[in-house]
Image 1 (cartoon, rainbow, N blue to C red):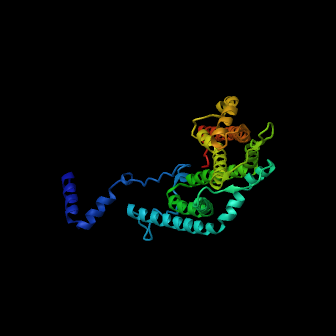
Image 2 (image 1 turned 120 degrees about the vertical axis):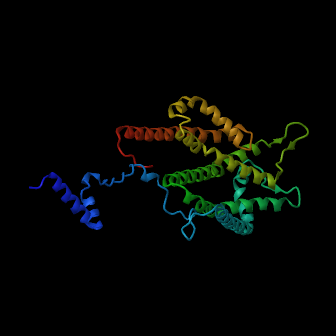
Length: 330
């Protein structure tokens, strides 16, 4: 009988007689299955992470070949956008020169109606030969800005928008459109409500003095440049005053002011509205100031409601986050 030594010797003989390929296969088969590392499943992104991904229309960030644009390429694109905006403004301004007389006629109509109701002859004067030209130049520039404004904004937006997130795009569009609407509303309010009563009150102060032996009369001698500046400054001042809800809403969204604090300040808002009415209108009479102070005070109270709505939306979003519920991006 063979002993253990003979069995061990026979095993060694078998191992040495095995080919190298068979030996490698035997070693791999002897490795336990637990030694093979398992693949780790990728972690799914968070619920709100997808909402913060940039928009896919990166026309400014990537060129035609799909590569990111360099600084010089960004500057070149900015030059193209500014060139297009400048060409649109120049064309609109040149075209406005054809209608400047109609602009002046329509612009000064509230003043002429106020002077007529006050019992004065409606006449405007020019103190120099070049005054009509410069007045028409200002009207053409403003007309060009109004006409080419949407196209200029579109060119700027095409340069800026690809670098914004979707939420930032919506916020920028909301603020821009609200600002334009409020400014236009203020200008329309000044033209149809404020300018004619102001002209009537100011020219009504020019009366006749028939008492005594030497009667005399105060007649208005209004220059062409003065009446145009009065109208444009009044409309621009009212447009700025109507931006109050936008400014207060942004401050409320940033958390700098609260609706409760604004409501407590409401008693002082009347004085502030009268002060702003005196600063933003070119006339110094209290009647015009009160006409502008009334809508400013009303817009302040509307701003309280808007800030309260912003606070309520933020409060609901925080409560949803505390509960662990997914929050849709606004």
